[in-house]
Image (cartoon, rainbow, N blue to C red; front, side):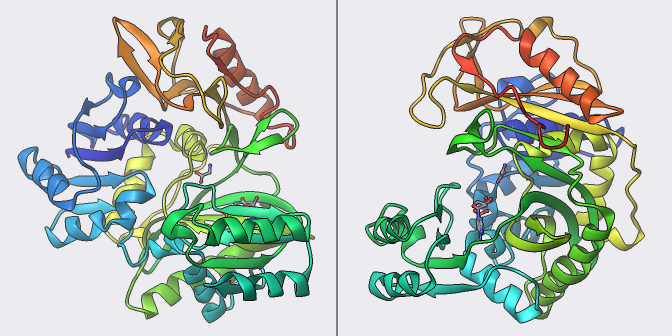
Length: 420
Ligand code: AMP
Ligand code: GLY
């Protein structure tokens, strides 16, 4: 079959790498993709936020399946347009993508189905929000309701910080995404991510992961999109996973179906675990980046069979073949990230790396200029290792990262510290 992946990051490189290994995949396209994927797929220049542009490409290239990587095309309704055109697609409808696109929507769904999450309130003006904060006290969490590229959340340790976050949101710091604000109870505990395929009716868990959001060693400094990740996440024991499926995921999927907006795609549940129980922090409606890199490294070729079963509504008769393995990825980012960073610096040594099913460097923000690989983004590469133990995966990932000659970039030295 011919497959089109939408997106251009490390997540999409990992998806392409796994899908390419499956003999069912004939021709593989990624739009817009990046230079790291050129040996796996044809790159296509395409406006991935335009349903009609994607449909046109699918018709011209006899595409049998579209895999949507990032949330923006989902929130724009590209999956709906593809389904209406009779094209098989992996990814939720615009209505179901609200589980990521609106914090208050997700909170309402949780309340309707009894899923455990933090207590919350919604505000569309500043003064009642300030009053609520003074009543509840700190720590407290302030969230812009809409998609704010991961920057709309403030975990406020003091009342003053919380009030400042309210002033920012209503002052327009997050544009339309901040016109409504959700204020939440602060949850203590350890965070982990749980990935579940859903076909509208049935659910199939495909892995757990933990990421490192802070830029610096020891989980210090500002938040980023993720500086590294590992899978599985030891904190998500089988017992907790079963409880999350029973109390959070299945009720959510049933509630979405009841509303006439069934969820089909990958549900990424961000969880807070405390005293052996999990509460929902948030949902995303796409794979995490860099969590996808470690999941794909572990799933390999079967990722395509699972994605296909999900898109075709066959999850009830589908199982995951688990290897007793571990994967870890280290993100190499441009100096200065997540603040202003330099673009166009040269990266050497990538062609010397020995890559195989246990060692892969996924590209996120690279291009070729005058025959040299250059960095074009903040998060640029994800050096990923797989092994029989987390220690082995760690060793392999760092061996790759250490072999890359890139003075313009940096990476954390302690990915996986909590689990190692
Ligand atoms: P979100 O975009 O909702 O995942 O929030 C981003 C990050 O903020 C999460 O990954 C948590 O680290 C933190 N966070 C969000 N909500 C809460 C909460 N209610 N209690 C504690 N930390 C939170
Ligand atoms: N790594 C976090 C995310 O993809 O949202």
